[in-house]
Image 1 (cartoon, rainbow, N blue to C red):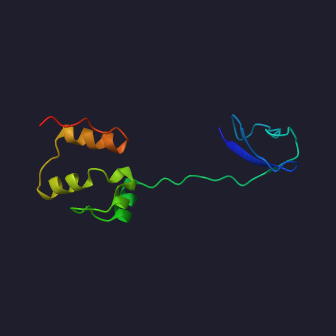
Image 2: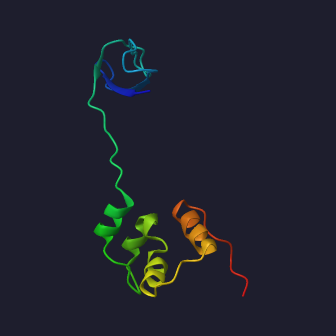
Image 3: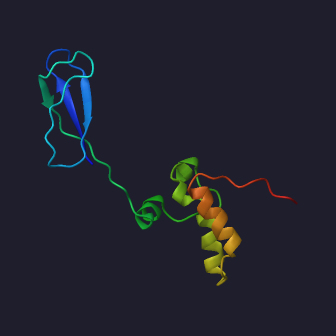
Length: 113
Protein backbone atom coordinates (compact mmCIF):
# COMPACT_ATOMS: atom_id res chain seq x y z
CA UNK A 1 0.00 0.00 0.00
CA UNK A 2 2.21 2.80 -1.25
CA UNK A 3 2.01 6.54 -0.72
CA UNK A 4 2.90 8.90 -3.55
CA UNK A 5 3.77 12.59 -3.15
CA UNK A 6 2.87 15.19 -5.76
CA UNK A 7 3.52 18.93 -6.19
CA UNK A 8 0.69 21.02 -7.63
CA UNK A 9 1.80 23.06 -10.65
CA UNK A 10 -0.89 25.67 -9.93
CA UNK A 11 -0.58 26.47 -6.20
CA UNK A 12 2.69 24.58 -5.40
CA UNK A 13 1.05 22.64 -2.54
CA UNK A 14 2.26 19.15 -1.75
CA UNK A 15 -0.33 16.38 -1.87
CA UNK A 16 0.09 12.79 -0.70
CA UNK A 17 -1.95 10.06 -2.39
CA UNK A 18 -2.50 6.60 -0.87
CA UNK A 19 -3.12 3.62 -3.18
CA UNK A 20 -4.03 0.02 -2.47
CA UNK A 21 -1.33 -1.41 -4.73
CA UNK A 22 1.63 -0.37 -6.85
CA UNK A 23 -0.27 -1.29 -10.03
CA UNK A 24 -3.36 0.79 -9.16
CA UNK A 25 -4.16 3.64 -11.54
CA UNK A 26 -3.78 7.02 -9.81
CA UNK A 27 -5.52 10.23 -10.90
CA UNK A 28 -4.29 12.67 -8.24
CA UNK A 29 -5.87 16.03 -7.56
CA UNK A 30 -4.47 18.83 -5.44
CA UNK A 31 -5.90 18.80 -1.92
CA UNK A 32 -5.66 22.62 -1.79
CA UNK A 33 -6.96 23.93 -5.13
CA UNK A 34 -8.35 20.80 -6.84
CA UNK A 35 -6.02 21.05 -9.86
CA UNK A 36 -5.11 17.88 -11.73
CA UNK A 37 -1.81 19.37 -12.91
CA UNK A 38 0.49 17.61 -10.46
CA UNK A 39 4.07 16.45 -10.76
CA UNK A 40 5.12 13.33 -8.90
CA UNK A 41 7.92 13.85 -6.37
CA UNK A 42 10.66 11.47 -5.35
CA UNK A 43 9.45 9.86 -2.14
CA UNK A 44 11.51 9.51 0.99
CA UNK A 45 12.14 6.17 2.61
CA UNK A 46 13.05 4.90 6.05
CA UNK A 47 16.15 2.95 6.94
CA UNK A 48 15.92 0.90 10.11
CA UNK A 49 19.13 -0.05 11.85
CA UNK A 50 19.51 -3.38 13.57
CA UNK A 51 20.03 -3.46 17.33
CA UNK A 52 23.55 -4.74 16.73
CA UNK A 53 24.34 -1.75 14.47
CA UNK A 54 22.94 0.69 17.05
CA UNK A 55 25.06 -0.90 19.78
CA UNK A 56 28.18 -0.80 17.59
CA UNK A 57 27.62 2.87 16.73
CA UNK A 58 26.83 3.83 20.34
CA UNK A 59 29.89 2.11 21.72
CA UNK A 60 30.03 0.02 24.86
CA UNK A 61 27.89 0.94 27.86
CA UNK A 62 29.81 2.83 30.52
CA UNK A 63 29.15 3.71 34.15
CA UNK A 64 28.05 7.22 33.14
CA UNK A 65 27.13 7.44 29.45
CA UNK A 66 26.19 10.82 28.00
CA UNK A 67 22.59 11.77 27.31
CA UNK A 68 23.08 11.20 23.56
CA UNK A 69 23.64 7.54 24.37
CA UNK A 70 20.03 7.17 25.49
CA UNK A 71 18.49 9.05 22.56
CA UNK A 72 18.09 5.59 21.08
CA UNK A 73 15.92 3.56 23.47
CA UNK A 74 17.58 0.33 22.35
CA UNK A 75 20.47 1.34 24.62
CA UNK A 76 18.27 1.26 27.73
CA UNK A 77 19.43 -1.53 30.05
CA UNK A 78 22.65 -2.24 28.15
CA UNK A 79 24.81 -1.49 31.20
CA UNK A 80 22.80 -3.99 33.29
CA UNK A 81 22.88 -6.61 30.54
CA UNK A 82 26.63 -6.11 30.08
CA UNK A 83 27.26 -6.38 33.85
CA UNK A 84 25.34 -9.65 34.18
CA UNK A 85 27.07 -11.10 31.13
CA UNK A 86 30.55 -10.19 32.49
CA UNK A 87 29.67 -11.85 35.79
CA UNK A 88 28.56 -15.00 33.99
CA UNK A 89 25.07 -14.60 35.42
CA UNK A 90 21.73 -14.92 33.70
CA UNK A 91 19.63 -11.76 33.71
CA UNK A 92 16.40 -12.47 35.65
CA UNK A 93 13.32 -12.77 33.43
CA UNK A 94 11.53 -9.96 35.29
CA UNK A 95 14.46 -7.59 34.61
CA UNK A 96 14.57 -8.65 30.94
CA UNK A 97 10.86 -7.84 30.64
CA UNK A 98 11.31 -4.40 32.26
CA UNK A 99 14.20 -3.54 29.93
CA UNK A 100 12.23 -4.69 26.88
CA UNK A 101 9.19 -2.65 27.95
CA UNK A 102 11.35 0.45 28.55
CA UNK A 103 12.88 0.08 25.08
CA UNK A 104 9.35 0.07 23.68
CA UNK A 105 8.45 3.25 25.60
CA UNK A 106 6.73 1.78 28.67
CA UNK A 107 8.51 3.14 31.70
CA UNK A 108 8.48 0.97 34.85
CA UNK A 109 6.48 1.96 37.92
CA UNK A 110 8.36 3.24 40.93
CA UNK A 111 10.17 0.56 42.88
CA UNK A 112 8.86 -0.41 46.28
CA UNK A 113 11.85 -0.31 48.62
